[in-house]
Length: 289
Image (cartoon, rainbow, N blue to C red; front, side, top):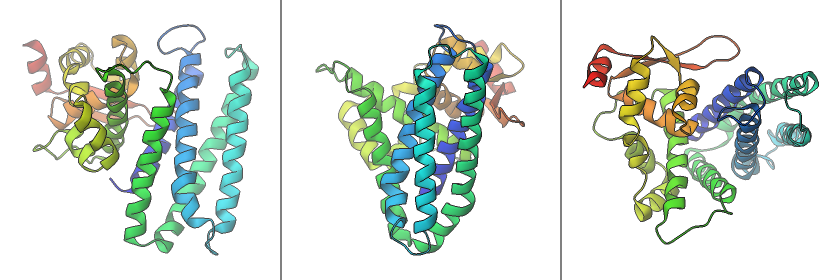
């Protein structure tokens, strides 16, 4: 997966969260509004920083791009300002909060549109293949460092369990990104985890050290398959909620099941744009065993 796909898939993931939050309710549940907003806050800040430290830095001194990059950086600042204001409001179920969030979501949507239709096409013209490869590596590395920072307060013991979970989360996110682009569907020789790690040197080093990446999908495979088989169709978000799995893990498991022909997925039309999953005849047969 190249740099452009990584960025646009990040956009799609964040847009999914923006669409889901107004449909949730305040409270302490697994998929409560507070939890989803916290997830959005972290994901969005991670994405903005990774863009700035890789693509933006490479273009900001270029005559053809400097003005556009400056405008987009200003939009980043405004997005982060509004995120901070919304985070400080205790009652996230109020009409005022919901309307303010919708305003932020509209700002994010417009910003992503400018990046995908103005910045990325211009970057393709300016940057050569070697520069793009280097920026892709920097983008992945920035994302990995952001994941490390989010969990820096955890107690890391000699067993490496925490870093194993960190690798699983990162691999899950990258697996979902590849799944969205269709990159996994025709591959049978290698698992999604192996494929993605082969393309992400930073994650590869961590995974080989702790050896945890492969269990992320396999240990939940049967449970997720049975859950999907019980319904005509369902969304990845609902699977995550019912089984109390992290959303990144859920996406990675579903991607693996789809690669094996056990489920199929479609992209729901409309503002929410959820990924809808359904069982295949082969998947239903396996779920019964």
